[in-house]
Image 1: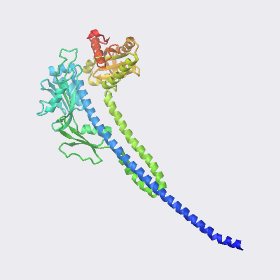
Image 2 (image 1 turned 30 degrees about the vertical axis):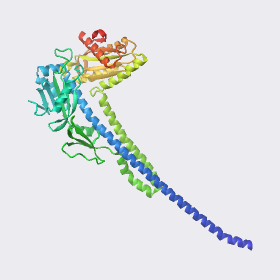
Image 3 (image 1 turned 45 degrees about the horizontal axis):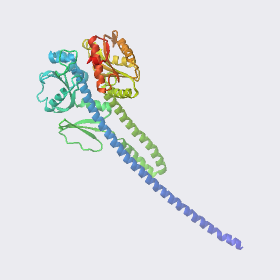
Image 4 (image 1 turned 120 degrees about the horizontal axis):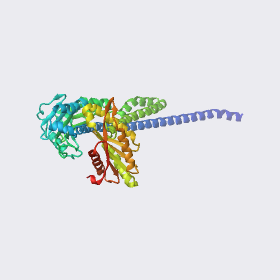
Length: 491
């Protein structure tokens, strides 16, 4: 009986102990859940804070890159305009017919009108050495006289810079100026003759001026080709734009600092897009912490991919800018600057490893006749055909570049002797041995080729092109479709 009483008294105590144990467990679970909830909320808040900081950093990075992109586009437009002015002023026929014979019909067909029709150039003006108008067009209308006030002090300074150049390889001058109250890209190049010619080759015979307004034609192309949203030009008289976090701007000014206006656009905000779309899911994650956390994780991955996609678009735009800066627009070959970079590396490699390489300076014979008889379009088609054909003649480790006009340059690496170079020259001459059919037209051209061997002829990069150029003119002086290796006696 005592044992049964003890057993009977122990039952409520066991139940009480179980209840107390359950309460302790519930309190522990509650505390654990609360701690977990607080921990998760702190973690979510921390992650969200990191996302905010990252998105702001990403937006700043994207805005900085977009500003670099717009500045680079301006630089490229100026560079292309300058190169175009050089191509049409460093031309013996233009010196004779435009400057000295003042053949305005020829100038209209081959220089002023052609540049305006082909490239949409707003102003094309040819001046003599005294800055007197010879011929010019403005938006399709031939000029009878220079507009008053066109040649401002800054314009004249640009002209002075243009003729302060090496006339053996003239470099145009270019900048952004105020042209009749509007900002414009301006390039000035001297009319220069080169041998063989009856005219002096060490002076400027006149000026070729190209002007493109920074207007809707240019801005519209940038909006379309480079996805620059809401790009516009604010006039200089307008109040300076305030940085709102939504719009980016780039001020334009003359060389003296006179404001010309401001380019304004809406850059991409991948971080802001991330936050705008993420916020509802963060709130949902707080209310439904487990489901929300999983959803947050998945959405975060999606937004990271979205941000990555925006950065990939920026990378693609940079790649396009790189190609425009380093490759010839017409032929797709490397341009002068990229070729010089490759040649510099190859020269160092040849010196270091006692190797040899050949530099071929190629000038097309008869190209001027093609332009004169069949027109510039046929000439451009011929240049593209020659570029593509010469690229097929050499190895993948060799380089082929276009220097402008009808001049090309080849870098043949790891050659054993001059005979290896001669074999490539023979292939080029064989390529142009007979009439060439391009675009249904038969054209007869040849190639005068000058060759400099490195490091045998020189270990100085600045002399390589000069030696190859000297050898090329030596070959040209002997006839057509010939080649010469550089020799010190040629100078």
